[in-house]
Length: 95
Image (cartoon, rainbow, N blue to C red; front, side):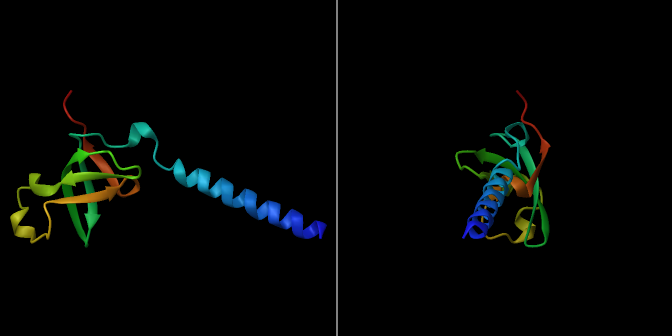
């Protein structure tokens, strides 16, 4: 019985630690803000977009029409949602 409690506590502690680490994957200063240009992969394509909304907890909404070849790419939508862990910031907005 005591061994089961120790095992359960160890498993619980491991899950808490993992969840804490996942929540902190992207630091606030590394997250995109409105007006930033980001790059990301979607459907095997390298895309570029301008961030239009940061109101989501783990993602940003961005507009891909800034790409010169947007119409040639046959994308279904002008905007998309990208998780913080799935983009890199190409250029910060001019302040």
